[in-house]
Length: 277
Ligand SMILES: C[S@@+](CC[C@H](N)C(=O)[O-])C[C@H]1O[C@@H](n2cnc3c(N)ncnc32)[C@H](O)[C@@H]1O
Image (cartoon, rainbow, N blue to C red; front, side, top):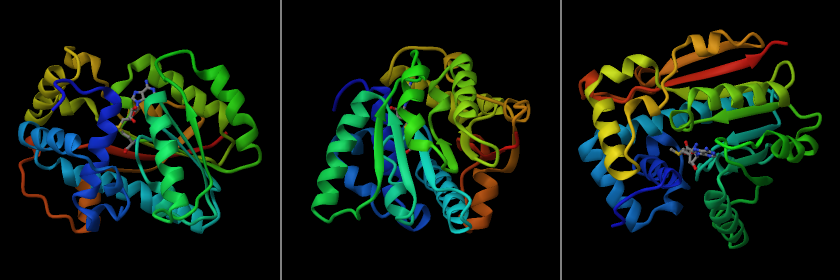
């Protein structure tokens, strides 16, 4: 087992969590990314941070899968842009009429593009319209990315997704990426976003998460991992929160039984925002 993981390796872990409870995630393709190295990381993570992490990742994915399905069925969106897409498999779980743009770091995009094209060619995955774009949200990406997106998004209704990513950005980078969304979107378009709110810092699970990441990723302090309160979203003057759930609320809707204590669970918040002006 490698001694350290890179931030982009977390994308493999997220996919494995989804594959570990397919009835809950409804993602039958994430298992394609499974490998022995990730399994060792996942086992260590579940033991040292929180056993609930399989289900928290499945429930989060399911929330956005259902929302995107619903919006697409009602002809409200025709293009999904996934920022920090990792190895998520939404395009293959959704109707083929939707187009997709997936953005992530060069390491993820190079591998995902090659694997997806191979699996589509071999009939392991259904054919879908996906554009892959490399970008690093911690660098000056806006001008180049805008140039690439401009032609692809023209006249389309957008669903922008940022799932499992904000935690790794700082506050400035998060503000910057939301301003970027504002720039590429039109009135009526949607954003799906996930974040922890500040209260998570008092839980045992979050303390163990920071300890795990310090040990395995890079030594850093808890302050370097971003948490955001609802005000981050409510203060955005061009957007309105349409829906807000957390792991506990959406679990109830899915009849997902929770056994662990609240303090041992990494409870994330899921937001659906709509652009109002
Ligand atoms: C935990 S994974 C989540 C992946 C996917 N959104 C999901 O939910 O399955 C975090 C993803 O964010 C990406 N990411 C983190 N920091 C980034 C940055 N500065 N620029 C671009 N991508 C970034 C990683 O490469 C990784 O794919």
